[in-house]
Image 1 (cartoon, helix red, strand yellow):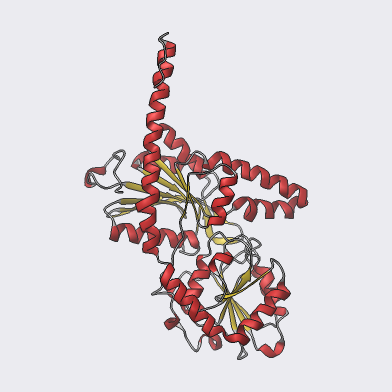
Image 2 (cartoon, helix red, strand yellow):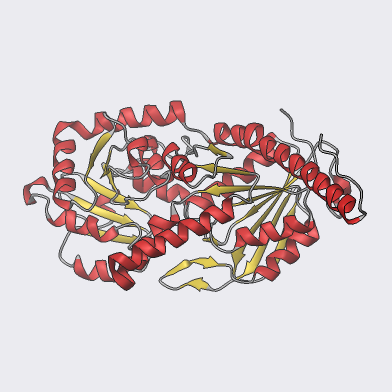
Length: 432
């Protein structure tokens, strides 16, 4: 099925009849280029420009209001403050500025990537321009991963469960408004189905297997960090905060036997970094900070031996795939999307928050041959995951379904308007 434009945008003379203006809308974002959404936006831009004739508008938070047009790519930054505790990330609150950009460019499709308030900016825009198709990415099970966790810390278990219930109610009301919703796993799709959100698809994400490859290994990487030992070098890459359960990794490391000779590097920034750095004093753990250079991240991963993660609510796990693509086995937890990313033979998973079990899995994986397990992980990623496959599905299946739904909406709205007018005029209403 081929995408066809639903409406023309102002200033769209350069667009031919077969092209669309597609808008990516994200509320939380790292301008420096880290994080899963940043990777997605970058890879999607490259796909659109090399594989399609479409135009792409990407609206993200930035240090100031700024629009950069580069051929068919429009990059709109909305001035936003840094997130406290995660200074590389910014968060849009100025929905009026986002609406101004939408009004100016009039996209044919809006893809909403965050669950907070910007989805309703897109919904409100669609009410004025009903021909616009709305697609949402349910990329994080936020009622569990964010609302419940924060609620538990603030008010205890009962309050957290109530807050999660409200959040799922918000999700139900919000995502029913979208013409199509994609999740990153079948588990997340089932969660939405229980909330009667059924116009859904599963969209596995991808990894650049050329950049993230075992060939990027640097034999001097460990020594350059000043880390001793000749045992496994563990690595984690991501936000160092409560959501990611980064503190569990330090607890796990303390439970490793001293004669294993292990060391660990934690790549990233976040609210817990300073605290964990202090708590790890004297341990062979390096906190290298946020890494905006993807090539350096690939070097760090490929130069390590085992990827570790205690994240319990992962909805996909691009960082896990990138590590596997570099030839690393994974030690994680049997929760969220992790079992999908780490099937039997590619690593070891244990109970959530059981740091002793995680430490035991690190020892077992290393003794059983981590390199061979990592080679199998690499082969799996090369075979199953790639960004071209991701965006072929998005543009070839999900977007067309959203456009079809938008057309149905227009027809239904026209019929409702017709019936209302006939009732107002006192004429009989005839139902087909």
